[in-house]
Length: 103
Image (cartoon, rainbow, N blue to C red; front, side):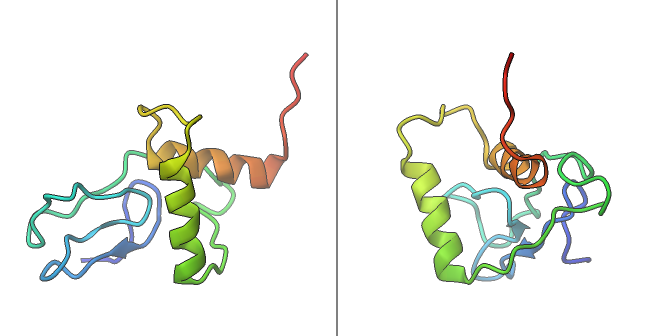
């Protein structure tokens, strides 16, 4: 098995023994069995950065990435139906294109 999500090109994390293997762009359900099927995101592979064929990598250490994910989860302005894959795609789009102006 490749260690890459076929949907977004992100890394697969988890070992399938002590934690469920899943795309880095989703948070697996807390009740997911460690040996269950691999959980993939629903982001299309070129939706973020088509020129690279996968999501760009910013070298964040684990602690920084954990803080970013926690801040997104605790946000009171992000709608509940907004999934991690959507957020990652939007952040990538912002980093690539900058802030959108309306009007």
